[in-house]
Image (cartoon, rainbow, N blue to C red; front, side, top):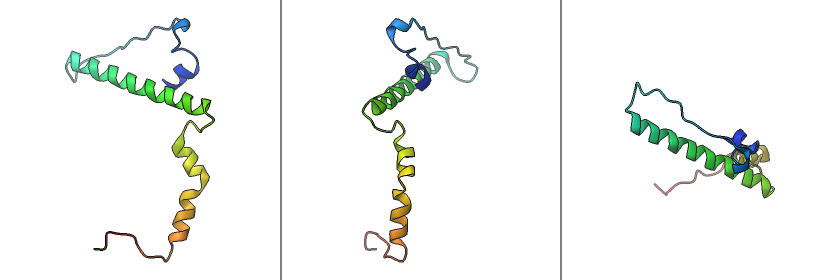
Length: 89
């Protein structure tokens, strides 16, 4: 869905029609359709959020941005030899 949104295929003027093509051999038809629609809705929302982040000048992938920042390695290095945090147990 990210590529569809990024390519403009989700815009009304694009004239793109979407269809679910399923074979219900494992689960019942209506629950399978509902699950598929919910999955498409979730993926569409995630794709729109990635575009929103990019429009705001943010990295579209926050986890990748965190990894690239090196912050995790920094805090791990600072904790070497330190006292373990806990609830006092």
